[in-house]
Amino acid sequence: MILPRTGVGIDVHAYAAHGKDRPLWLGGLFWPGERGLAGHSDGDPVAHAAADALFSAAGIGDLGTHFGTDRPEFAGASGVTLLAEAARIVRAAGFEIGNIAVQFVANRPKFGPRREEAQHVLSEAAGAPVSVTATTSDGLGFTGRGEGISAVATALVYPRTSGTIG
Image (tube, rainbow, N blue to C red):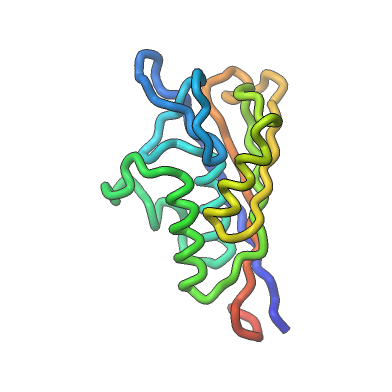
């Protein structure tokens, strides 16, 4: 019997300081006219949480393990690139990806009109279905105060061979 494994990933980024001209990348998409997020890479919390959930499900570390600030080659990297590389690493570890689901919390941008586009870009990067939902925190916490964006993701992976993995 093949037993699936689930993983959870969380990523949080503050908005870049006023006066810092950083683009907003969210869900693998560029959002013109929106304030960007601070981060080692492009700061895309949706793509980062998705990658982290994959690593968690496979039991092979986390985002920092694979793409941390001690890895200068990932400075400024696209979240889509990181997600694609995470999917490659997970598959190289002997797993297939069932799906990834991500929810992010933010006041802006209005996500609904670009949901399908984001899901397509992220699914293509992961080589598996990725769904993305968005919500607000009704003015509560750092996301409600407009200080940043957080995202939480779950991923389902399963071993390529029969049996269980401990």
